Amino acid sequence: MEFTAKAIAEFLGGNIEGDSEVKVSTVAKIEEGKPGALSFLSNLKYSKYLYTTSASVVLINSDFILEDKVSATLIRVENAYESFAKLLSLVTAAKGTKQGVHEKAHVEPSASIDSTAYVGPFAYVGENTDIAKGVQIHPNAYIGNNVKVGENTTIFAGAQVADDCVVGQNCAIHSGAIIGSDGFGFAPQADGSYQKIPQIGNVILEDNVDVGANTTIDRATMGSTIIRKGVKLDNLIQVAHNVEIGENTVIAAQSGIAGSTKIGKNCMFGGQVGVSGHINIADGIKLSAQTGVSNNLKKPNEVLIGSPAINSRKFSRSFVLFKKLPEIVRELDELKNRINKD
Image (cartoon, rainbow, N blue to C red):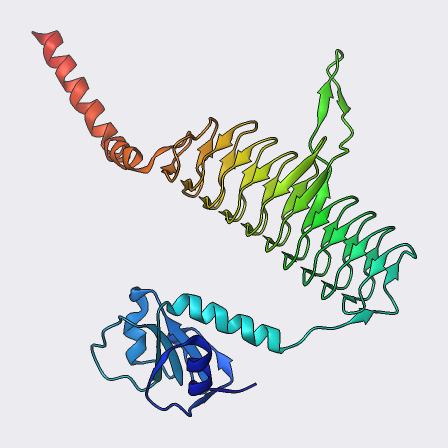
């Protein structure tokens, strides 16, 4: 599919500098741009490539000041990164979606599937499950009993949504993800063994939630594990039973959230963050990669790092001293020796 620079600019509300009729049919990173490709520049670290790229069209921020001549046609927009994402969404939508139930899928007779939905080969849809319009269920996906899947949600190959779970509209559940696996609940016994506690709750994903590949979200022991609207979960994340994650929070790969923890809205967690159970995290908290949280975080919008987590500014000052620790110890030893000699 081809687009002219003029069509792209009109769609994005941008201003063209260069040939408005030049056409693009693919996308590329600015440093790997080639004729017929669309690219973008938002990170100034890559600005040098703007003057050497072979891309035909480049999106740039409206306030970017050129330092040299550029061969590509430029489209100035308010935010190049957001505009590029918007354009990719348009391209994806233009590819279209499938409809109907594949002859090799298995759908229980009591399930309800909208005529505009798609169920791929070897997928399973359980009893009393409701699949809304525009839903895309890819091959080998498993949808359990009494599940509700909202409009235009995509469940990719090999993903699973277990019994009684609720998935909102415009969600994406990527391959290998499991929604509604058993919570990690075991009662210690007098003889040192553990008795499994039945997990009878469910998982609720609200609208516009993305769940990355091989991420697991455990069902609640009782009640619901709740992922609020707009949450984005990366690959390989563990969300335990009865957790609640607030609106528009994003969590990077290999992070783990222990049971019954409540996370506020608009939080940002880096990779490999670990959060203990039964604590509360305020709105807007930002946790750097590998941060460990074991207590309530009550101050909104704070940036923390380390394990246990501390304010990022305090951590930076402390780290400077930590790097000097061998030198400080050596000086202390020298002072002790002097005192002992005196």
